[in-house]
Image (cartoon, rainbow, N blue to C red):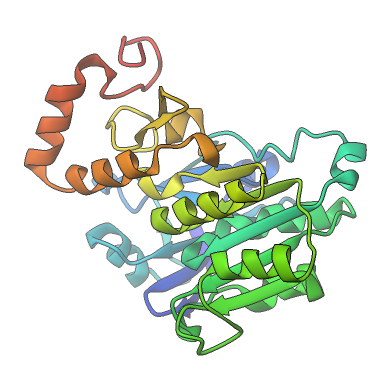
Length: 297
């Protein structure tokens, strides 16, 4: 059993848990994800790693109640545990493999929408540990839905910019308005943007950064379901090629992702009939999985 050491409510229907998972904590990196199962009959739930402590052997996850399984997760208490806590999976942030000299020369912007602040946090924290300071935008529909502001401010300091769509807190408007403010009015120049959040937010962030010629990486973890590529849920088109968020990502070049197709497919996948039609129309390209079954070709 993977014990829940701490449970905290971050916002309405958004929860944080610190899990005892020494083997995962020992090797995980920012950008990767894990899969949890409450019990042997439970649904597989992929979640991006929010934080980790190698010395304590813990991994922090953040999740939102969106269905039956995550509602069951919310009902777990400190001292309870998960039957499975598998990882790390996916690929680490591309920042991890960059030479230190290159990182120090770069001006990096992070953009987090809603629960996207959770996977952004470990990347900003890792950079800060390397002595590299990045600008960070976190936004939500209103103040009540903002998460991890204090934690992010601790590592980003004055480089943190908070915004709300309804102007109830921080800067007024969506994250794209803050990008415009920083670039147009404050003369900021960025070599890389990393954006994580709802699909629609990432789409418009990419449209905004494209007009400023800022290379942009997005995390497609919101569309993952099974976490292995076998279910076909996270199939997407990147630069005209079929990719799977869980086995090829979850991070991709945002300017090459077909967001409209991904969002349409995400809606269709929610119904049994929609899943059947996708499987019929996509044939052996419906899923990727291990790469040996032919589904990835």
